[in-house]
Amino acid sequence: MDFPKEGIVFGEVQYDKSYSTSIRITNPFAVPVDILLATSSNRLSIKPAKLHLGSSESATLEVSFSIRSSQIISPVHKTLLENIRLKSAYFDQAIPVKISIGDSKKKAPSTGLVSQSDQSSIDAIPHSSFEDSFNFVNNQLQLERQRFED
Image 1 (spheres, helix red, strand yellow):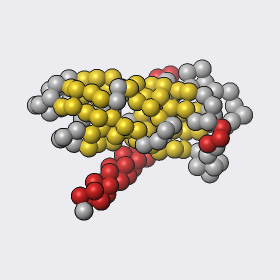
Image 2 (tube, one colour):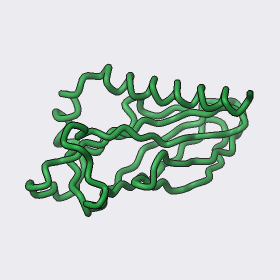
Image 3 (cartoon, helix red, strand yellow):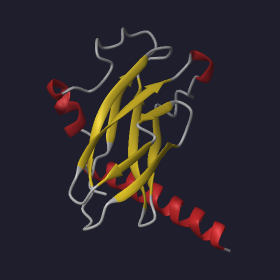
């Protein structure tokens, strides 16, 4: 599937708040595909959970994130790397999701999301970190696939 290489970025999220965004995916194949979607943790949710895309068709996925204060992340680990898994008969892919945990004393941004006006914040993150996340997730999926095949 085709989707933005950087995946999804939630920036400066706060505990006990919900955030959402969307991402567009496109079927580059010459055949229609049925896709099952899943998230790597219960902090993320995705809609729809199933999707049918014809050749060259696109769809928008709605992604939500929330973290409860009971799930406080160590101050050392202020960034969470999650993923959204896309699985069909033809592929098994992951969309990387990068979540930056904000200072709990700061007020949450009104949208809670890095918006286009905050694009400079995204641009400040080295591109290789997105690629590293994407490659890590795909490597984990390959290892998982091998484990199931053995």
